[in-house]
Amino acid sequence: MKNIKLVAKNGGGRSLVRVGKVKVGQGFTIIAGPCGVESEEQMLETAVAVKELGADMLRGGAFKPRTSPYAFQGMGLAGLKILEKARDLTGLPVVTEVTDTRNVSWVCEYCDVLQIGARNMQNFSLLKEVGKVNKPVLLKRGMNSTLEEWLNCAEYILNEGNPDVILCERGIRTMETYTRNTLDLSAVPAIKELTHLPIIVDPSHGTGRLSLIGPMSMAGAACGADGMIIEVHRRPEEALSDKDQALTPAQFGEIAKKARAMHRLWAELEKGQA
Ligand code: PEP
Ligand code: MN
Image (cartoon, rainbow, N blue to C red; front, side, top):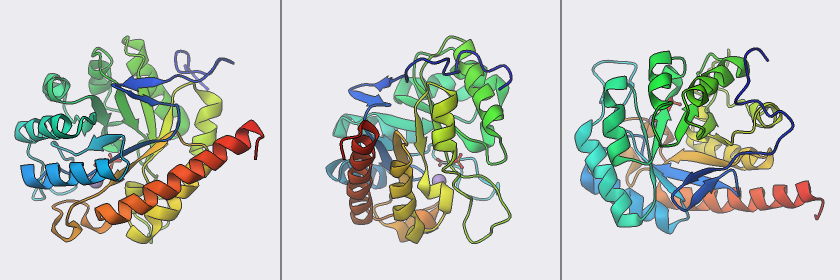
């Protein structure tokens, strides 16, 4: 692969990305929460519920990249302050998206992991900016991107001095319209061949369909993903964004349990013990 240097595997082991007590790349890390922060009550109630059901980290967007300018754009700084409260209440680290270089310092002040969304994967000035901070970055795959393009984006971040990148396969555009995206699970073992960085899957955006999130979570664990990021809302019918893929806390709890069991089986088989 062209120009893949710092992220290349080079025969070495796999990197762990530490976020507080969580080590991404060891075991199966589950990140859960709403698509967007909508109010303090919504975020805190969802955060407490997913913690009880086994989440290791929280998610919630304060800056939402939306297809329509008329759609809910996120709460901005007020949303970041709510995320900080959710972290204080649960003790769980918080992942949130940063969409603009001007907001990087705010996001660093209030949250633990900076997410670069699919639409910004190749926003090179944003990549350079998050490469200069001392917080881990969750780098989603662009919906029209090859693995080589994606890894070059991770290379941008490492090249600026930030070694802590977590990759996330969130589905790509194909001719299929039944699903929102096509979750490319072959990317998981391929990425593990090519780079030392951890990789997680996003079965929520990867399918856009409630009924498919459970099976694809299991499949992600079965092909060796280091974790998943999944959308959960205390009352999915009220969600202001991505309503059709929002799980109830109870649905999330079931899926989290099964995906962890699948990951344990995968790890045993890899060690040759099963
Ligand atoms: C999200 O995680 O809320 C999101 C917008 O994801 P993506 O960038 O993968 O579409
Ligand atoms: Mn979403």
